[in-house]
Amino acid sequence: MASRRSDRRAVGTYPRTARINELLREVLADELERFSDNDGRLRLVTVTGVEVSADLSSARVYMSSIDEPVSEALGEHRLDLQGAIGRQVRMKRTPKLQFVADPAVVQGQRVEEILRRLKDREGRSR
Image (cartoon, rainbow, N blue to C red; front, top):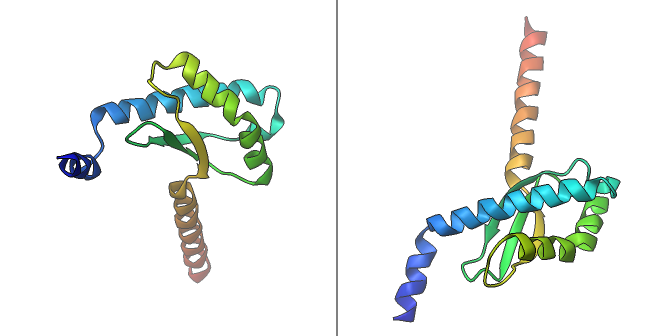
């Protein structure tokens, strides 16, 4: 019976999980904005999405960009961010946060660069 349950969970995201993901994204965005007042490394960072695991033990936080200083700042503030989630969101457990760069942002930048080059070529050929 347990294997049937895990098969169903793997098929798609439940509406509850989607709501939790969005709630965590909002809380983290607000907290990072507050932290950016004191830590300049976090000024230009945006939370683009959150994916929480099915058991709510971990969450992958997608960021607009992560370079070395931002990664260090997020590592330093990770426990504070988890604490903010624990205070603001009613959950059985607070997920451990993992910060990663959003691949959609990188792909979007790549598409923009390709379009820019095509436009430049078209302008030169006229």
